View 1 (tube, helix red, strand yellow):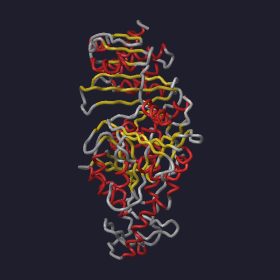
View 2 (cartoon, chains in turn yellow, cyan):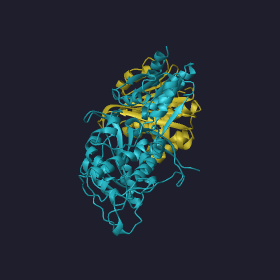
View 3 (spheres, one colour):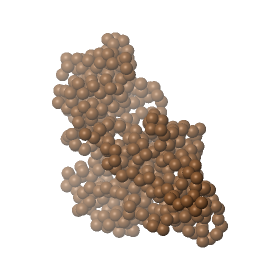
View 4 (tube, chains in turn brown, yellow):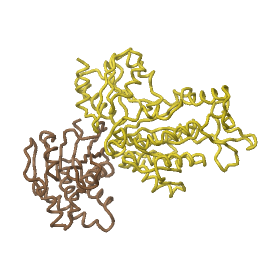
Amino acid sequence: MSDRYEIRFAGSGGQGVILAAVIVGEAAVIFEGLNAVQSQAYGPEARGGKSKSEVVISRGEIDYPKATTPDLQIILNQTSCDEFVPETRKGGIVIVDDTYVSAAPDADAEVYMLPIVKTAREKIGRELVTNMVALGVTARVLEVLRLMKPDSIKKAIMQRVPKGTEEMNERAFSEGYEMMKSKK
Amino acid sequence: MPRVEFWQGNVSLAYGALAAGCRFFGGYPITPSSEIAETMAEKLPTLNGRFIQMEDEIAGIAATIGGSVAGYKAMTATSGPGFSLKQENMGLAYMAEIPIVIVDVMRGGPSTGLPTSIAQQDVMQARWGSHGDHGTIAYAPSSVQECYEIAIKAFNMAERFRQPVLIMSDEVLGHMREKVVVPEEGSLPIVNRKRPTCDPGEFIPYKPDQADNLPPMASFGDGYRWHITGLTHNEWGFPTNCAEEIAKKCARLMDKVSAYRDDIVEYETESVDDAKIIVVAYGSVARTALSAVRQARKNGLKVGYFRPITLWPFPDREIETLAEKAGTVLVPELNFGQMVLEVERAIHGKAGVVQMSLVNGELFQPSEILKKIEEVAR
């Protein structure tokens, strides 16, 4: 399992956590030639409720498709923070949003509290792009770990987002990337 | 260079069906299978095919049967509640010998149960759900790549044997995205139904050819007369009370699968040669089982992995041989014990059978199966 890198995005329905993991998976498989499996868990409601999405990346075959002890968690609300942070791999990375999570959680991991939602809302003007800011943060982490190039994630975003919104999404991605770069 | 995609299991299955030549889909959207209908709705019109969203699940399979009778390779997709509703018309397709593919992306039941959560509670319904006797062909894919390939195999079997073929997928597999290396066109065999070659005036619709005991199938509109009924019928397709004709027809429905059992049965193994414990798992659970078996091997335990790819017909003889050598079989399932009964039947008491059940809407974690392996090994 050493070749396995597990990423989990968690928040509430509507924050785009599923799409975020899908984009990381697409970047890994299509632009990096890696293996990836993306899965999700959500309730029957379209908005609100708990939403969790995971992507496992590996150079080798991936048997179990879900995260067991995530290496990286990006958490966008309090409920998810309380539930999921304890599962982080020892020495892994936890990133929590400072709008919807009240305090940095205790964990045997590197913990960062970042203005992800605030950046989407205030710098881009649309809370809708929260997941793109989160992807920028993720891209920097994966770059530092030499797992993936930020450009692969950016390309995957451009393939996915609706025409006419590319510039806004790219800005959100860059804001997230720079935000994490100032820390790591 | 083969094309690489990052597809959902459901999407991959739909593309596999299209590659098999499926050109008709009748259905009704239901979580967690809806992406199959969505993909077919988008793609079929561009391939001169037909997609019809019907008023309900029953009409969905009825239209699919109609599409097949009209000469198209036809499919429908559903989940538990819809699978229950489709049972009656599945019986019609078995009796009238209409090739169709039915996908059940399993979610938790009974009733409307858990729309967005995995289960494996429909596997016995696949075998016994529709009343009356018939041979069953049911596949259980366990990767997104396999969803594509099994869709093609399912059509090949349906067309060859003129009967419904089931694909028992599950919520985790249907919704998860994974790398797919799309097979090049022509690299996988495609089977088309046998058509009559005789003069229409000499056509006897249910008269099997001597060589394979299977009757060729005409399409409505071809000029071949054909009476279709759910009543037990003779070779002319007309209802019969003649004991000899009844016996012949009913036996032939069973023989399709039993006579060709070795052509149909598929399974996969890993590390079974010196194994003292064999974990038998299918669908998404097989992914967990494989992970647990590999970890157990690293810890020095002699454990093997057996995955039935066809649930029906079940690879019973193959499991029996391995189980007898190993001594213990562990069967994790997301139900209260369904295929474990078939495993017990297969091994005739020649090995111990340990059942693992999980019915909480989730998939087993590798650590849970590993713990059980360690317990059993002690």
